[in-house]
Structure formats: structure tokens, C-alpha cells
Length: 164
Image (cartoon, rainbow, N blue to C red; front, side, top):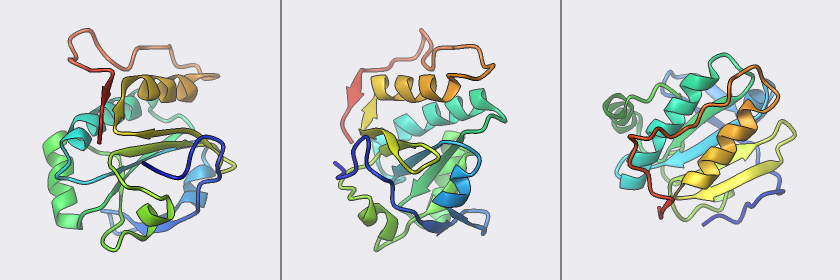
């Protein structure tokens, strides 16, 4: 669970990325809305969910939205995870004692937020929620030239929900 629900203001943060650069939420939001997905490499639901966020990111291309993953593990384990699951998203590191995860009130992963440019949380989702991910995809493609394509394919075996 998280104490940050739709309509709340997302706390700003600055974290280092796998590429060694630092990124803040404020800088990410200068380009448009951001999807921020917190995960742990050992979490089976995270392993299931992140490839769908990668698919969404690939579909968005050079749009004004940013999808970023926030790992609660060290750089080495996170890099192995990204390689194994085909994740090329900007990946930030929120290692123990998890200052950003704690400021967001997280108790479970994955936890995913769609954050508007003014830091208002538009979608807050814990675990894998097919409906919430479809809503995020719809929000990010609304008002763009991107054709509305379903996030999930017929051959995907996707439940409506998996708890984190």
C-alpha cells in the first residue's frame, strides 16, 4: 500500500541512475508526465509487470512522457534484472534505507504512479493491475498522434490483478 493516492502531490526526489547520472522528479516532469514504478529484483510480480511498462515505453517512443523504474536493490543486481527482463527504462536506485520509497509511504512493490507535470498523482497502483496499466497507457497516449493500441496482446496471459 501507499499513503499517496490519486490527487495527492508526489514528493520530489533526486536519485542516482544505473548510468551514474542523477535525476530528480522535477527534471523528469519538465518533459511531461512521468510514470514512476518502484520494484525489487526478487519480486515475482515486479518481474511480471516491468516488461509491460517497457512495452508501453517502446510504444511511446519520443513522446513527452517519461517512464522510470526505481529499484530498491543495488546497481549490480538491478543491472542483471534489467538485462534478464529486457528493461531499458531509465532506472534509478533507491537502496536501503529506501529514502524515496519511505517518502512515498510504500509497503509493497511494485507500486506505480502516473504523475502529472505539476506533481499531482493521476494514477496510484499497488501490485499488477491490468486496468490501472491500461488507464496509464490511455492517459499517456491521449492528445497525441499515437494510434490507440492495446497494451496487452491476445496471446498475453494477463490476469486482472496480482498483489505485490
